[in-house]
Length: 46
Image (cartoon, rainbow, N blue to C red):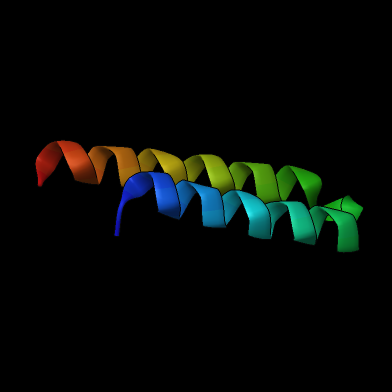
């Protein structure tokens, strides 16, 4: 899957979760950053 599409979908899902459960903001941001970093590194090594 294209990394731009992956990042867009993850961003939308994270935004929805933040609206539903704002107290999870720091966890969602942390997970988002990890996923985006892994996707970026995967492109470099593939």
